[in-house]
Amino acid sequence: MKKLSPRQQSIFDFIAQFIQNHQYPPSVRDIQNGCNISSTSVVDYNLRILQREGYLRREAEVSRGIELLQETSLSQNRNYINVPVLGNIAAGEPLGIPPSETWHSNSIDNVELPPFLIQDKKEVFALRVKGESMIDALVADGDLVLMEPIDNPNNGDMVAAMLKDKEEVTLKHFYIQDGTVTLQPANSRMEAIKVPAENISVQGRVVGVIRSI
Image 1 (cartoon, helix red, strand yellow):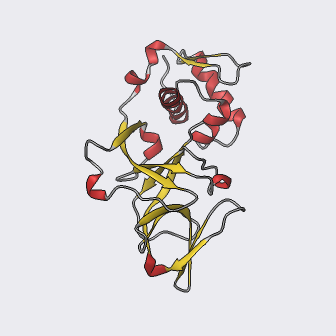
Image 2 (image 1 turned 90 degrees about the vertical axis):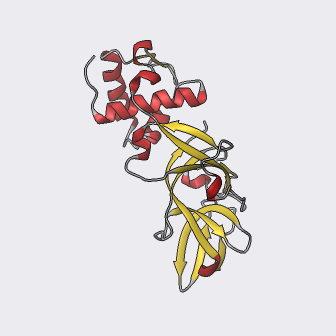
Image 3 (image 1 turned 180 degrees about the horizontal axis):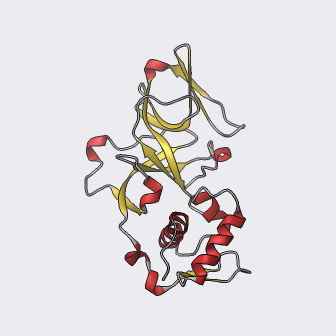
């Protein structure tokens, strides 16, 4: 079979991982969002190449009519990266996550992800979203957010922020001005959290989202 371009490889990897996670194939829109592709027509073009080269079989009239062929199964494709799932993070109200010293214990779940989702990020971890306050940023209840550990975010970053006085973590957009941090939800029905900067410890910045549906 013809060697795939980086974009075609990323689409193939995404489809394989999506099927493993959900037990059904992704839609064209899922692939567009998951691989950060500009339009569904670009996805369709690359799917036609993957089908032509024997990597998958597709029923174009069916929304999720994609089948990976046996000889290009997930286990044969390429090495996957284990990312620890550190628990739940509330997108509506603060909710605790395990302390860092427990991240590599046997009690912590892991998810296998293709390298293109991680890119060159270091020590990436995942949290499962609970709540709907980030729904307008396309982060829904049940999604996994991939986090890059940082402690100095930029205004507008989506972060996991610890409220030190409560020792709990919440997922919000981060803004700081004049010593006050605003943790802004992406849901017009919910209020922002405003606290002194010294009461906030940023645990990580969102670098990717794995959708639950």
